[in-house]
Image (cartoon, rainbow, N blue to C red; front, side):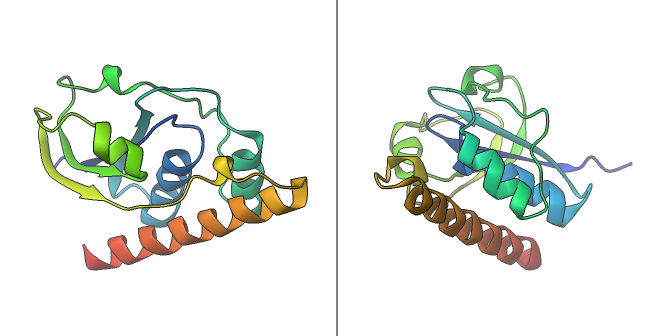
Length: 141
């Protein structure tokens, strides 16, 4: 039996982008990968993250923000994918047990200041960018 390839999506807080990427890879790839996400400084998943993923038909029920320390040097990953520039810059340069490191740069939807509707729209835009990138990546594999 061949083990599934393990993928870790990493961002700063594990509250939006990495959660979205994890949800989309699970959704679109089925059980093809073992998918995880984490943050350098984990917080609480943002309500707008949950809302826009629910709208996309990919609910994140039971998801919670996790710190990178639960994986660092403890779990082998075929792919470590940073989804924000801060995580790419601050992620350990050497990560034992990682075969390939990729960087997908997405703007932080939570950093956008505006009305509720404007912030919701920003979360939707980033969600859609992440979904597109995940689908492209799956198709390349």
